[in-house]
Image (cartoon, helix red, strand yellow):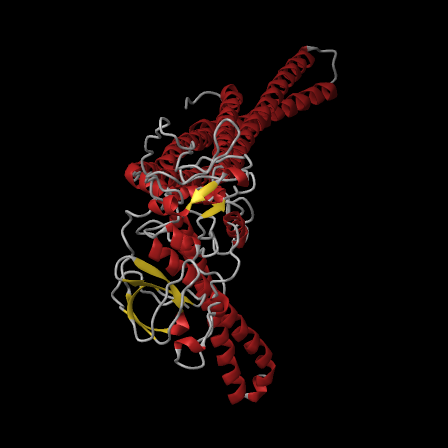
Length: 617
């Protein structure tokens, strides 16, 4: 700072220092706006991540089992963390820059005010000393002039002979008084001048330099402080770069974890039905004098509007997707009615076959077909076999789903029930422990108050266990069928009648063949004559079911109905299907004869290692 007059510089310094403070406040405003931008950006990123998160308990949530969807979910989570780092930037800039600078600006304003106050005070003091000096100088000058005039007047009076001695003496005294006043004024002026010079020297060499130095140091500190704040501004941003880099690395890692083979396999597992593809369609020779037939792979009628369903010829196409390696005639007459009770004695002739009487009137095949179509609740026709699509509400056993999908549904149901059982069991254990505590410490509570809750939980466990056993039985049945084609048709014993000539009616305007085709046309019984022998030929070449054990006939049974087989007391036969709960056991004699006998008429010896030998609850 130059050692010039303070009045020449104070105004400029005041303007400059105020400008410096304005710059600092402008920088503070800039940082505040940056923090607001960071918070707004972070909020928008979080909202974006939340917007694309899968909805809970929705179909969209199921999609995230695929690796590509999992990678997208990881990207959303990383974006959420990314947004968090921008919030960190905002928080750190506020705490490390804005708050400190606001406080520093207040201190700086106070310091500036104090420095300029001291400067103004010193300036006013020197100006006061200068005024005193000017006043004493003017007084000295005036006294000197008065003394000079008094001396001249005395000399004039002394030279004049006409003036009395008294007047001359008076003039002389006046001149001496004025001369003394001039001398006093001179001494006073000299003292004030000396004092002013000292004050002025101190003002320009001590006070003003010190004040200017303080102002200079104040400005330099302000400049340094704003520079440090700029460094902090960059450092706050730089500190989150490694974490942001980790977020980006997480997104890259998630992208690299995408496995297209795994996703494809999940699709296969999710939608495979368990059905085998249909067989080849054989050539239909219309040159032969025979009634025109329809494709073995469809239940639909001809385009002329006359649906003819005839199972003639030697076509090996699979008509039903649930028939597996057994003759259809056996299935058509497999007994749906209750088995006869065992005879009162071992005599074969002592016991009539009861409901198995061969003399009973046989129903037309169309009636049996319609009976089958309504025997399964909520499965109205063959369309229900189409890849999990049912024509009504989903049955409890999921029988409207394809085998593989049905197994998954049943497995999930069993798992859910087991979780519920475990939950109820834990609750029962907790209540039991609490009851024991009450028994040992009656003051804590009444043990009898827990009996009702304990009984309720126990009852719930029993219900859940019965439910779980039911679904486990269905699951075991499905798992036993999955390796090969479905055996569902084995138990559909009331599907058809075994008479030589029976009529067949279509499912009421709603049918579907194994290849997925279906027709809405009505069939007419008079145009559907089916020969049992021709129909039987469709399955002659199929491999017989493997034996799962043996049995010994306890009584003689005259199987006169279609689907049953006669046995003699003491005879040993092969078991190919055990009792499924309906009271009938399927057996085979030699390699050609097989059928159902009442379970109570035979003693079964199962081979536990044989495929299909399961115990059903």
